[in-house]
Length: 76
Image (cartoon, rainbow, N blue to C red; front, top):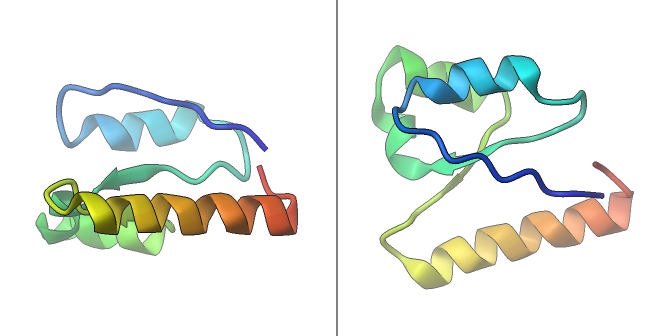
């Protein structure tokens, strides 16, 4: 398993990054993207993991759970 960190400048940059990421790679995005109408639906349907950047504990829990799942299932 590995983690790729990408710093993008706009919400729509994520859609372009999805095209260049390796197969079986799941992006993590800020939860605010979920509420952007069509973009939010597309992100949700593509399996993006959302974190709440304003609630630090919740964000750490989501990332920790994702890491445990990656380790347990040997998923990249």
